Amino acid sequence: MANITNINALSTADILKNKANPVAKGGGEQFAETLKSAMNDVSDMQVKSEEALSDLATGQVKDLHQAALAIGKAETSMKLMLEVRNKALNAYKEITRTQM
Image (tube, rainbow, N blue to C red; front, side, top):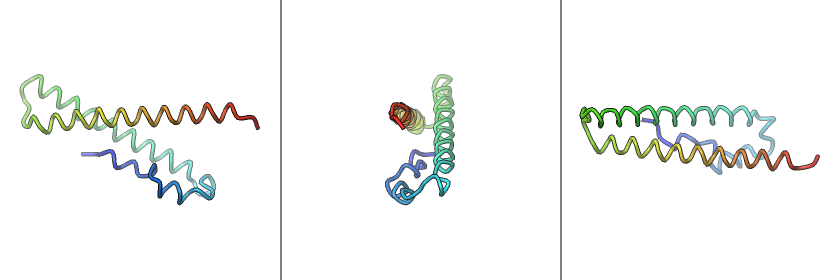
């Protein structure tokens, strides 16, 4: 099962490592790939959550605790992804307001 710790490019160590010239080192491409990977992880968690909800609705749930964990992980990962999106949009808006 995927977990939220797979978003390693957003860690402080990775940001500092690429701070000198992230574009020249392919940092933009690396960020895009990391973001795609994180979005895929969120999508996988959403699918597992939907399966758990379906199993709960039909009475086919094998482990109620695992189903609740899957639903909770999906909810938390979606909230985190929305916050990352909001921060990225705010940064983009701020950059477009900056005069060159």
